[in-house]
Image (cartoon, rainbow, N blue to C red; front, top):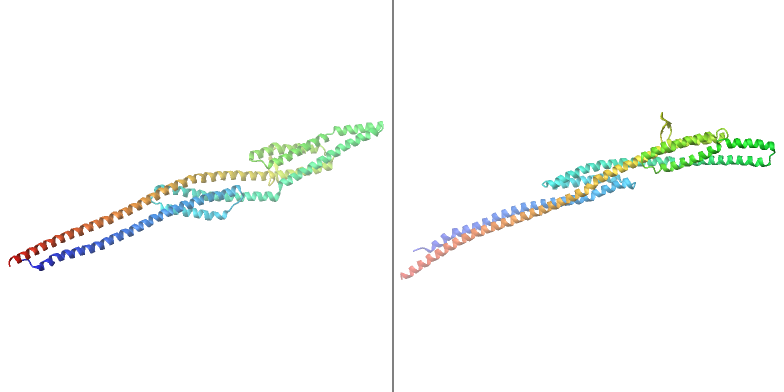
Length: 401
């Protein structure tokens, strides 16, 4: 006959085992899930940080690049040179690129585009220095032009010479009129003398010289006005050699024709002609062996030449600005697309991490539940068997009486 006391010893180890396994399962499961959740949280934070860093860097670049372009165009076209912004813009550009490069180490496309942006950044830095140097040269040329006022001086000399020539022309015509007036009231002998004097006056080259001189002065005035609109060095050289210099030769010759009859006016005109040449050609100008004018120091031609050089440099720098900044727009668009793709990849990676965590939780829970069910089933079988044995023993015991 089985003893009732055998029931508890046979069941107790299994119950203890079930309790111990459940406790261990809870501890191990909690540890594994906590560790996995912590690692996943760190990965999620890292992925989100990279995502935010790349997005912020691209936004920063999209703000900086147009600002740099606008700053250079202001210097080139609006005579505004906010050079104090250069260091700030370049520093922000470099920081944004560094952030983008560090956040996209695993993406070769973004890394390659970042290297292209770094190369553009060096070009922008060099171009900024060129713009500042050009702006300094432009201000120097303009300040010197405003200080010397050569155009006004040239126009003043032309007006003075024009006034002298017109006054001389009026005096010459008045002299002819006086002779004609005397001729009408003179005796025959006097008329003969007046006729000879009038013919000598008409035969002189003064009248034609004065007309030529006035035409040449007008031509010089037009040339001085054209100087301000000459846009190329070729136009400037053509104006110098084919317009101004030949006109001065004709003018000086015409002035020399009045030397004997009007010496005082001749001296004044000669002095003004020399003064005008100095204003136009500069100091210490001379003619070379080919009788071509060699400009001296200063002068309106040199001033205009400097302004043309400034304009040529401006156009060249502007082409460089367009050449550097125009591709940057498409480059930033490509980076934005790559960042969006990388962001999508990171989101997929986050979802995969969460999915793996869910699967791990499911497997651990399922495995734990299965083992507990198996232990419960074993315990249940043991209990059932013990109960059946106990019942049979009681039945036999009762049948004895």
